[in-house]
Amino acid sequence: MNIFWNLVSYEYKKIFKRKGAVITLILAAAVSLFSVFGTIIGYVYDSNGEPVMSRYDDMKIDRENARKLSGRTIDTELIMEASEAYSKLELNSAEKYTDSEEYENYARKYSEIYSIVRSVYNTSSERFDVEDFGNMTVEQADKFYEMRRQKQEQSIMQTKMSDTAKQSVLAADTKVEKPIMFEATNGYTRFFAIMYTTGIIIAVAAAIIFAPLFSGEYTSGADSLILSSKHGKNLLVWAKLFVSFTLSAGLSVILTVLTYAECMAIWGTDGADAAIQLQVPMMSYPLNMGQCALLYSASGFAACIMTAALTALLSAAIKAPSGTIVIMSVIIIAPMMLNVSEDIVWLYKLFCLLPSNMMAFWCIIDSIQFELFGLVIRPYIFTPVFAAIAAVIFGVSAYRVFGKRQVN
Image 1 (cartoon, rainbow, N blue to C red):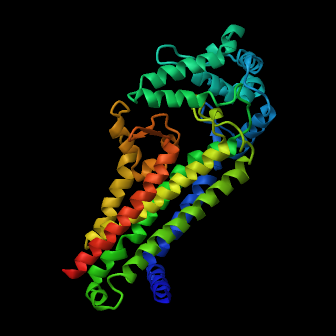
Image 2 (image 1 turned 90 degrees about the horizontal axis):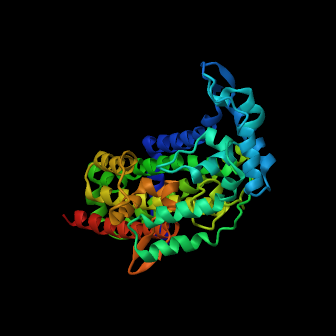
């Protein structure tokens, strides 16, 4: 066992002696940190292009407005109170309504309530905008949760899932506490948005760092020496794989924790127990913000491990590290530019299992379920489990491929 750990130490030293690997790690940390702070740098401009206030001050106003409403249920009373505030807006003005004093003094406080209500009442056939919200009646407000359920049922029943999966999703919504209590959740909503960028950064960094894991031995000619060494075919290969898994895991944990800590420090820690429906009103899962943050982080962690394992496999199969980097870049970046229709469920769900999509919040909370051997499995459960299994398969495959290349 001491030999194994000596080999692990040796492989770690090899990685950190490469300037490219060290620079990649530093850049990954720097870009990840800046992606959080970068969103509050600069100014907010009015419709005339004039600076109104700094983005940081603008963020603080939104945070305080949300905190003022925390603890209130989203019911007829709150909806009508928000509607009355929006009714004061001059919508015929040439300037944007968000630039007006009426918006700052009355409506802005309820902007999140408007967003939640709009997501329920807005449909493909009937548009619901600021003017409609300002003219809401008590009867309309009374039907908020009824309208939400109707829209949800319509959306779910139109999918190509099996009837069992459809009923499973609709049944889950009955466990969501209603009326939903409003809470300030700025820190968590920002974390969900920024973690996607952090996840992509980790995946790209892993691809660059581990591309020479095996192929570096081919280009340097060291593969023949490894073949003739006592532990070249077994312990050294496992040591390489162990290093790729642990380093990618460490990078994922560190950058995820830093992203979370920054978001909480800037936007506030409020809302861990708040319903996720405050951000995604039509979601059926009875989860809170804290649970979603944990599930999202777990999925991103597993996706990064899978990415490292796939990179190791390609590194064992391709002689030049550059080839591995190119292929992994395509695998990571291409899905960000593509869309797959939900009508072809099996293809859509496979698309969700690509590394970059596993790091997207929409994939984890998706209402389209995974169905396997008659079982209906939630995306936030299936995704990390699949990634973990795939990582093991890729790792074992890399071991075998490298062994065969040594024989040749």
